[in-house]
Length: 269
View 1 (cartoon, one colour):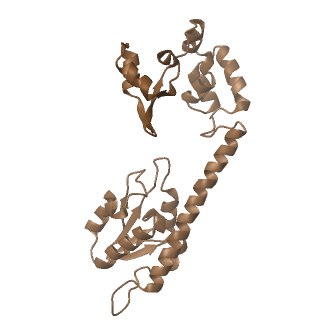
View 2: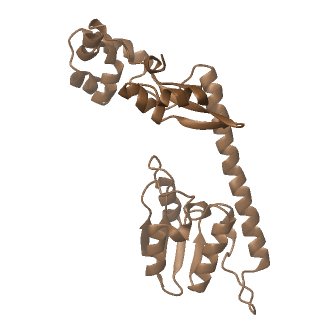
View 3: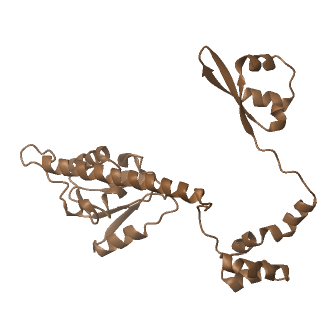
């Protein structure tokens, strides 16, 4: 009887450190690891994921599938019941080592019908629905928090490696002749972090400023009446104007339409 361990993260910015800790504390003997590529979406049905498919191919009756928590394997109630059916058909046990499902025997079946016990099915559906609600609420709160931060002028993303308190000293040292490599060693950061802190002082930036090169115009989307668009299609246009017109998006307006054209202001003029 083999112990098959399945791990997955939803984005390539996440790690399996927490899963590794939970599974290590479980004391699984001779685990056989199956880990999805980083970023394998939870929206993808578990039975369609490459590594879980390999796990099912490798598995033999009476083997045990181990996961740190249920939502590493499944997303919603439909996924859970599908996976439990497959595990039952293949006579595989499922052990969940953390979270609400960890105290439940999800493979319990009725002794005569062989179907998943109604109480287990009810608990699985209830807990899965609660988990989905929790994730949706977290997503909404995160979005609201980002909007509130933007309203205050705060930007999201990773904090700069060179803190605001050190930036002035780094810039002064750079202007004093210290190299980027030396500054990176002194402040224990990457060269890229130093370049970011002194970007506007670097030769290529100052050269561009002195050349007084105008900034490129950003595209603007305008809705053009359909009759105007029809007229322009028959008119003489230069290549850029013709391309912008051809790439326009038709928006129906009652019996007529408008053409939404995205182009630089000069093209619109």
